[in-house]
Length: 422
Ligand SMILES: NC(=O)c1ccc[n+]([C@@H]2O[C@H](COP(=O)([O-])OP(=O)(O)OC[C@H]3O[C@@H](n4cnc5c(N)ncnc54)[C@H](O)[C@@H]3O)[C@@H](O)[C@H]2O)c1
Image 1: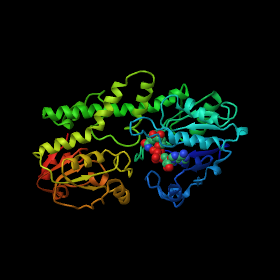
Image 2 (image 1 turned 45 degrees about the vertical axis):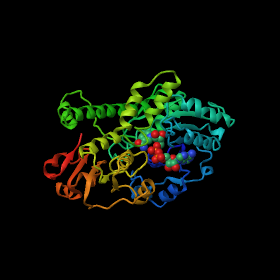
Image 3 (image 1 turned 90 degrees about the vertical axis):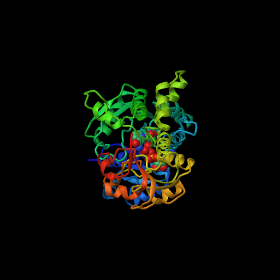
Image 4 (image 1 turned 90 degrees about the horizontal axis):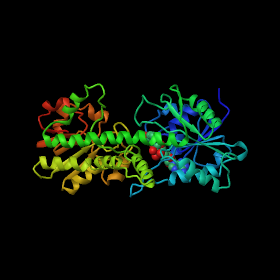
């Protein structure tokens, strides 16, 4: 039974599309994206992010548009646009600002719509930056529109923690907005809602969730470096440490993507604005961002400083996700080339044309052979499934196989080639 509100979701990416589809089951919902190509593809029944199955997309009553005017006069606007950083790692709020200006032009003050932000920001962005832009357009907060915030918890590639199964944190500028958001989000998640104490608290919750993960992985990466120098496998150390009841099971590795590797900079920016030095947060970022170069230098030294033909397996920021943005595999390629390697790349999930555009070369198709150095960088399912025989075939005699994600650790004795991992 459709609810009363008509809802517009602004930005149809990893976060916006699953949310809009879930809402469309209960409410009259429209999804807006400025990328006409994205809208065309979705209308054609395909989601290239792989989050939504084609059949589910085609069966939905969600209206899709790239024309803002189609979203005029809605009761609720939910903003799910990207929040990247600029080249100096400072928050780039331009997509949020631009989406807010768009929404300002669509509001019917008689409806007093609620504008909810889901994009990851730092405390204050919704009520200072966004509210100011809406008021600049001649609208008065509380009278013509009201604000809310509900941090997204989408985990790309994760088919278990989907939007309908996660606790949805909600916050509103007053009790009425909170109750409205509890009702709307409550209708689309079976896990229930949590009313945060304030919009700022909800903004803070989201940004620290990701910063916490980044810092924990950074600690693992630091452990991996220390253990490597001590001649001990970090995985062996972790296998043993994990037996303790309160040990947190994080792993070393590359931290890419547009959330975990980016959001801590939002928190750091807020800290610096307030005169606080975010030492832990930034140390974690630095450790994680330099991991790719550290791995390659380590492997190069292992090979006696001799360059050769290298193959990097896995180019996306995460396993089983096609997104190449902010992937740290690029660091591996860059460092290898700096050291004089001839570098081939492969990825079974990423779009080959996008790979070509991003890396300036075509991905190789497996099986491939004769590489001096083969680096397993991303735990994509087809890589995880490779057997010792297949792995050995890729590596030239005297070559090395590097297993950053410990995908082939159980087979390391059978590969018959020099094997390296943390
Ligand atoms: N993907 C995640 O894992 C994840 C998890 C939690 C939170 N977040 C946060 O959610 C937000 C969105 O992330 P995402 O992964 O969905 O991004 P995304 O890049 O996948 O999608 C964003 C979409 O918004 C569109 N867009 C940009 N500006 C627009 C505008 N002004 N009007 C309309 N559409 C516009 C883009 O074309 C794109 O399709 C970010 O703040 C991100 O940090 C993401």
